[in-house]
Amino acid sequence: MSRSPQEIFESYVHAGTLTGNADALAEMFTEDGVFEAPLVPAGTVFPRRLEGREEIRREMAAYYQRNAKGGGAPNPQKTGYVLHTTSDPDVFVAEIDVVFDGAGEDATISLVQIFRIRDGKIARLRDYFAPRWAT
Image (cartoon, rainbow, N blue to C red; front, top):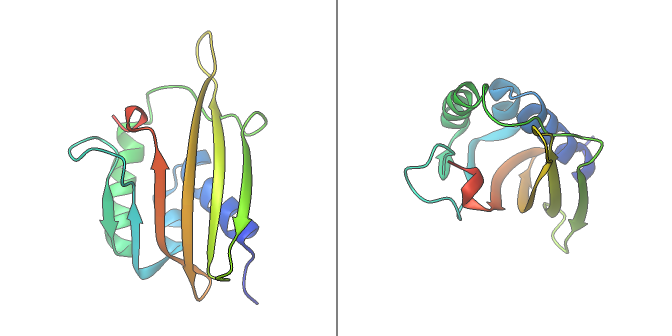
């Protein structure tokens, strides 16, 4: 039984943004999966392009560890998203407004993610967000 875009997206958010579990996140990708953040400048803390499940695992674990101390936590109750299916059943798009609790004011990051699925796993994910959050 294949998983719906909603199930895939919610699992991805839980593994990544909510728990910072690089192992769970990497297992969501195909062996040759690609994670891209095309708007992120080269040399920033957030990886711009990762190829293969093991590189995704290694680099995202390092990213989560570096950023464990900083910034506010994402607030799932204030965060919203809309999923859009496409004419290709293996492609869906997520529009997201992530709200981070901070000292004083909340901060919102608006982004778009394009998911390409193969055999129930993420074959390619393009994550479009403001580069200022990648540093």
